[in-house]
Image 1: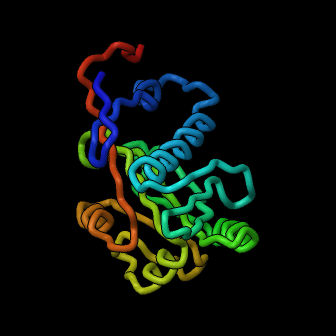
Image 2 (image 1 turned 45 degrees about the vertical axis):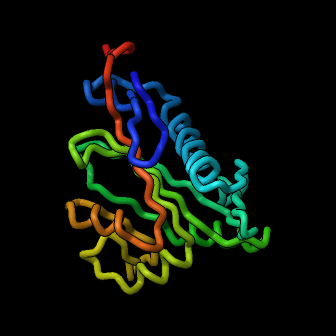
Length: 195
């Protein structure tokens, strides 16, 4: 198994192996997946973006981070492992935004959101990490149409991200206000094959 952790790199991951074969999963997998997504976001920010990061246990935020310009962020991490038969998208609810903004305000930080999405949209398993400030998501999302990858639901005020088609994925990758990193699974040997 070869793992190289750089942007657009290879990552071996067997989280869905049992589910794809119709077997029951470890009941702790959702908690482990959540911990993994937080750790991955900390890696991207700390190692690749040269930020100082800390994991916190606070309502609304999972990570705090500071860059070299001393901008400080309270970051909510949302992860989703998307099976092939489900819609490709993510929703960040209004109540989650309010909790994040309250925490960020309390600590004098900017609100940011990190979405970690595991999918097979491009025929191989990819882990996509999207990080943006909440203000940018709201401001840009309110001007984007429902056919774009990002928009604000007018009924619920939720931020909705979707990528059902290649058009959405291209918009997401080319977006100038979202930091996009992806990791790809490349299995060179199956030392621990699923049963």
